[in-house]
Length: 392
Image 1 (cartoon, rainbow, N blue to C red):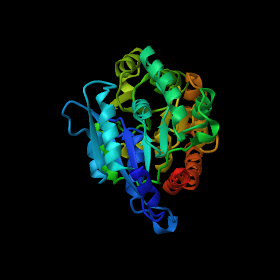
Image 2: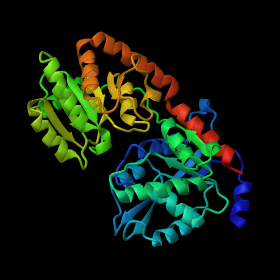
Image 3: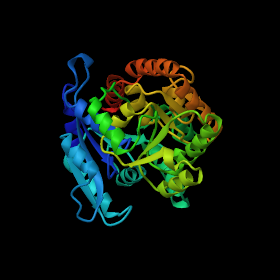
Image 4: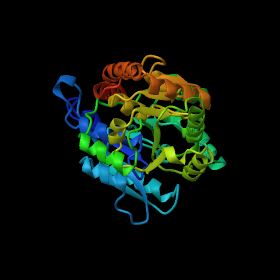
């Protein structure tokens, strides 16, 4: 009661104090906007007219780990970070640590960003503090994850607000019992990017032996839902229907499907045209290096790679899944095809390679949309307005 009274007495001019629970080992797609929010809203531009936010982040670590790529990024952003120790997944002692941290930090509002943090906060309780759960979509590689996902849909019913990244995800959660009035769709954001020096791009071309061929870029975790195998089939078909076209595929990222993708490249006879770049610390360089982004995903939320491609003025051939059609418009700012349709994807890539003027017109249209609909100000304003509605 004392803590609740203290929060009620805080002036509306004081910063909103937020504690976010995140499960991450490196800066994932969901983590990137969170860090940007913490940095930007510490001292937002005066012209935005938004209340300041002070963010601290709690993350889970096994053993005596004091650092990983995500924790290092949080510290580099000058955001306070708290480490919750655990011996194994869903270690019940994490609940005690979370409870003590919440009491000690006494935030105005609590965020959660993963299945585990949703569940643990639900079991710990948060007093009368508002709880905002960020839903970034599900993967279903095995029965265990499907059970976790079903548990998560039940847990999210208790949150004061659930922010998800596209309309299909919102409908799924509503169908599973999350109240419609608590559901909000918020796409990620990006700002137009400046191309690196030409010497940087030249070094990348040399490093990955790209020669002078147009570069088809695909970027993301190599997991089943990202559709890399479909893209390989599409490029095999492209070689058959347009043998005169010159191109090279650059794959940035790694993951559990790496071996399968490597094998598929060999079986398709494309080894001479494909380069594996692995995980990269500064991915924006590759958007400026490439001529086309290919996104063959079988499912998506609000993919950052699409926004990053728009920010770099890169033409896009993508599948019309998840929130992709909510970000780009087929024929206007990108070329969209059905998921798993390798021949259609091959046709989109061929069109972009054969008609560079049309490709540039689409990327210019996408850049205008990015500035108007997916800017940092739109994202920050939407979040802060929601937070203020939830606060006492």
